[in-house]
Length: 605
Image (cartoon, rainbow, N blue to C red; front, side, top):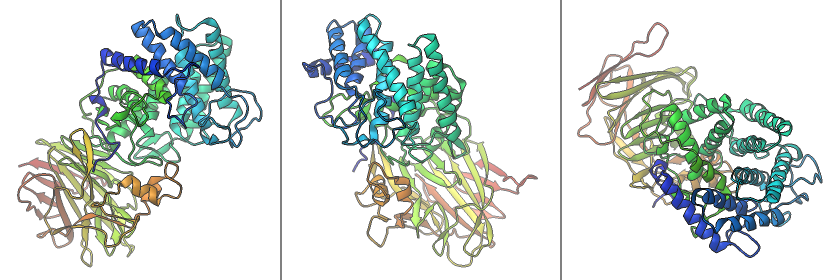
């Protein structure tokens, strides 16, 4: 079973002018065959996300004409633009729309669903999208759009902007990507307005970003991020926000967009394993955007020197939004226009700068959450998620159903490279059910092929084990497939366990149910509106690797030693407080320095 949206790395898509001309030629032929007598370019099966789609295809035809000079296109642009101006501009309030601050304003907006009152909640983002299609077409109007239509289009752009920023609450869905998109639309619109009108629009757009988006960023893994549907980051919408930040910086030159984009890009680089798999977020736990991410990943990947294009996208949306039959849908056309216009090349080599929340070398990656507990482990092409036991999630020692991974105090980190090895030592104070403070030291070492994890803490009364991960997925060429086991070895006895009980809150890796489906099933609201991260936190138990303490550890310590990935016999040895010897390295942990920071000496073997 393959994950439906975890497909190929986005930088593998052809990225040349010739490739983009072929994309536009495809769009052209589809659009000319679809164009109705009324000038409609909407997909015949379109129902929602529809109010801006015909105009989006029109903008792609305009770009295609500028690049190819196809003589069939001016008439198609004229007819399809006339259709949007005549049939898809609404000025009467949509019945039931809850977010108006001015009734009967008469300002134009775009509908998420065309029927009055059918589903008005999506009208705000639909109008943002319509504004972006409008300003793109204004940018491409020269020599193509007649003066009368251009004047009507510019007036429509003004109306959309004022509806979004004056007649409704700003960003009513608390979706960072939508809000930044609105700001981009205002900045692009201002370039087409007379100076006395342009400056207030530009100032308003910048103020909205600074005061309503930037000032409300959410902290996660040490980074301040634009909030997305109530969370800090969503693996579908976060990269779309990055693309909006790229466009905002491209057209305005304002440094705050570059600074915030750099921060978001470094965050994505840290949470993303080398294989590009990602999951998590308050909206779409495993669904990935495709071409909508390319601009931001490419633009900011080049800025920060990281291979962000490894991000696995939905390559069925590799060029533009499509319906199930593969037919073009103009809903995200503005992003394809910007992607084609921007000539930034992909940065294809990994960043060499150590990142606190990531360990990465070759085919091995560990992404750490804000508590410096692994949120994802990648080795030998397999991805492991934090396992669940007794409603607690994580990687770490377990005793009597309590997982020792949540810190009670400052977490300290030491990064070391030596002899072809990359290592990270994490020390955290942890309080157990007995309220005794213990220090957990976790050493992660990789040679780029295998990952060695050693966890040590003061000896506990009882028989603890190490919760060592939930095997979940693996690379399968250009796709990601579900798995229920991984290549794992342990110095102590190792067991792969599965939940004894059935039900949505007990996740069995052998079942066909995906993590995303399980997370939404546990969420409070319907799929597509609920918070899958919140739902997943209700998970009681999961499949899990459980490793017993390693033999030969110092008497005062419990030591667990696990290797992920290929290798022969795994018989590490331990001495003192604490030296670890494996078939590949020797590591000496501590003592702490004068500031209490952990010390690590590493040598290869």
